[in-house]
Length: 73
View 1 (cartoon, rainbow, N blue to C red):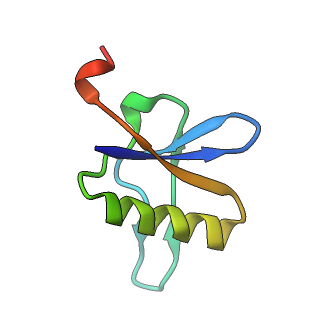
View 2 (cartoon, one colour):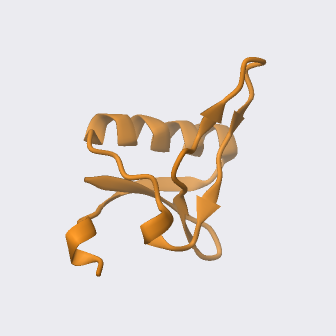
């Protein structure tokens, strides 16, 4: 499984339920600084697609990171 990490001044993770797309075409993302609140992707290709979208449209560095929820206890 993978999560999306955004590197700015601190590390942020794409939050559960993000990004949201609205009928008018607006896309909104929310971020959390705790990995437990991050959106978890089972499909690496989908995670890469979303990370590329964030990097391109928001001008930040977004990377995918391996995540093992069982190892994070």
